[in-house]
Image 1 (cartoon, rainbow, N blue to C red):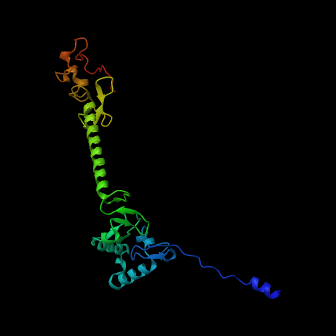
Image 2: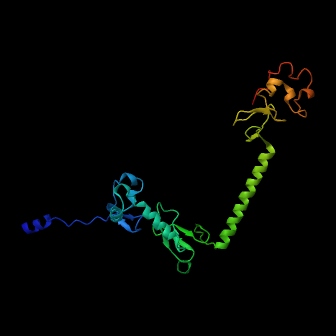
Length: 246
């Protein structure tokens, strides 16, 4: 009985906890998360946690041997150099969804037109450079894409034409202004310039309507002093404004 109790009380063998792994931006290998620095040096505060201890150590050794101590650079440049080298190979494809440099080499002979990221399993078509279009050939997808782009361009063109038809540009800042009723004395919301909706004559300044009266309107304008009854013409008291600004 005692032997049985002692056997039961024997410590059980602890199971090893499986460590999480993630990619090192220098060697592109999956490394255990405890092999990354928790608090990188100040010069690599934003990206130092993406470089493993081993790559950090190798980089620092190479820097110490051939560089002055105060000119030691960050290891991130290695990632940029490696990325530039990889991108020079037409077979290399970079994943557009990955948080950092990640990709793989592929050929259409063995892999077809589908790129599948080994990190996040994102798929896209390398021919169309778009998310994978299932149940569609590249020709059909590209034709539909061209039609959608053409429709968008036509809608934008129609919208611009409609804006031109129902709006006028501000004489000062050229921004489009639409009139929905009310007086013909307009005030631009963008630059606060006041002008006549019909002839664009300004209201302020030494040459403005407030200072010189309705004779500042264009002669073809309805509000020019020659086109108004004498009782309505603003010539005797030019600073008086008949219509408040909108």
